[in-house]
Length: 77
Image (cartoon, rainbow, N blue to C red; front, side, top):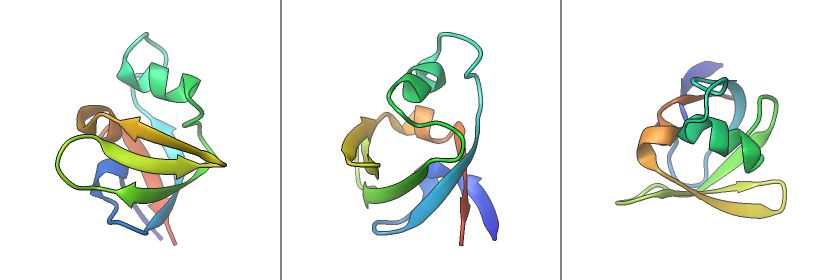
């Protein structure tokens, strides 16, 4: 299993969130946790093109800034 930033997942790839850097402060990463991007959640990358990323968590689709996505570490299968 590889660990990498969420921003490096390709379209259609799935990862499990294992760490969110800066979640203890009111940063973009902390707001990501407020949107449901928490440790243990599985995320599906819907679109990793130019601009913000689009991911699916549970039944929600969430747009994430690329800088914030690079602070979220995921484990791939």
